Image (tube, rainbow, N blue to C red; front, side, top):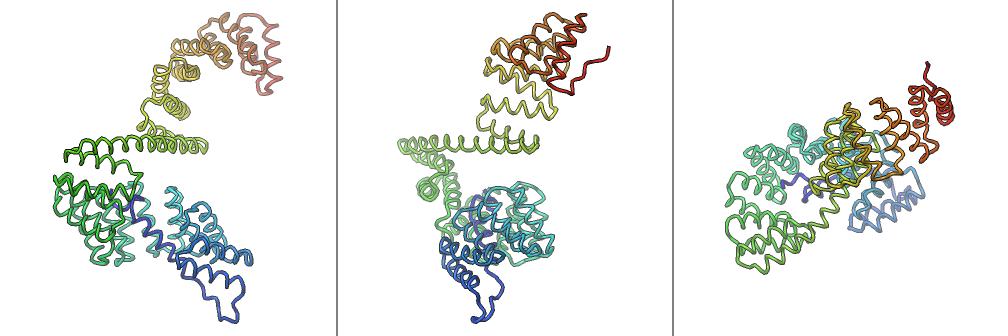
Length: 486
């Protein structure tokens, strides 16, 4: 993957850049005028610069306790918390800092970095745009917008990152990120020029070697790609991504011993990356080590299973949040992503059907519910929802079959009996409809809609006294249900 995504050290470098901004603070004044809060704050900054974020956090908290409106202390506490992995707590501190000094760009930049680390790209984009609104010439804010769009595979990333390069032409990170955005659009020659520019500006900008190698590989220039990956490994020997890319390219070139060595190192540095184990298994098999290949493949399968479960849960959790917020389109995308991981997951197909039904995409909802009842014939709720969707499409006979199936599976399904009664009434089968409404009421005595529907059916059958009793009960349960006029 081109480094511009969260996969490698481009993100960490940008995050450190944002954190470094936090250290440019207001002068505390002469030693005689330094109050206790400022003294604790200075001690915290010193500890943070020494790489001791936990101890620094304690000092910043002491400063805030003495002076709650101390914006710089909140800002630096957030930076320290980020370094310890407490992302949500860091976000809170950055938000407090932004509230204390609304016109200061730094809290918004810090929020953008923190939200990116959290994977909340929508919030990160809002943060960087807020910083740009305060200072349209801020290169870091402009670059942040571009990087978020890059991580979202948005083609607009190229234009945003070009603006960042214009604002700060000597930033190797902006040139490298622009190259990654161009590579996403398969503009490899332009991408290579940007990566080379990044390395001219800073020969120690290790991500650019990795990106340059990937672009060379995409152009079929594997010999040059290997050269660049090797430079990247020398530059950043603990970067698993570069070892992995070098190993894969060496494997493709037939240098199996070297490939295996690089892939083993990538696996040591990143033991939870399943694709590394898969590539290692392939290289070992090509080298004739079937026992080693089998062992690597078993590790891959075990890890992949855990990754799949985690990824599936992440998509379902996000889908639930989006549904709760009313974003059915976003929820549908999450359910569809989950089905790529587990194509026959009955519950996901059901939830996807419900989301499409609520969004008004009835044909798609019907397809999902039909698949669910085929995979799980005893899923009463799926039969019910399929019936509702078919009824909405005026396919009454099909709807009746599904409601009938639902109540046969679950005889106590009051909603199923009610829905079956509604279809039967629409088909002028009033006696059967009345029986279903009465069953629904027996199961759920306070079912106002069932009482009302029973009244309508009895009225059509000529039982005015029975209809009147049903309408009165319905209105007592729900005052909005007025008896129909004769």
